[in-house]
Image (cartoon, rainbow, N blue to C red; front, side, top):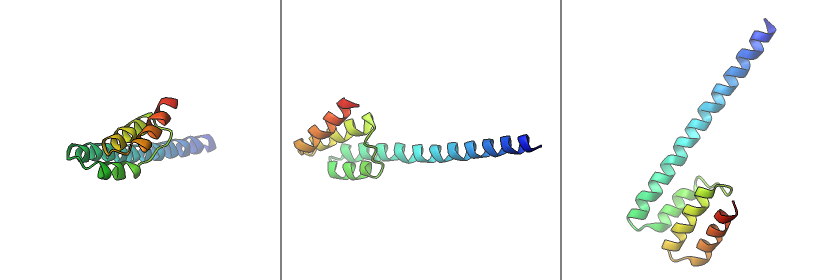
Length: 89
């Protein structure tokens, strides 16, 4: 009976963590979608601010996107920094 209780507890914890991950994934997807919308409207600073809310320094996609947005915003120093970080990942 004790083994069954432990297994149920492990399954419950795994399901809770998967739900949390799914919610976080939805937030990240929305941030990227919103950043593309702002880029389309040439509001590069706004697009950057949106992505900074889901900042992930170890993400290739994040660094590549930020490099592009800073480039479009004519901040070439920051752009280069993000592109170099993306290339190193």
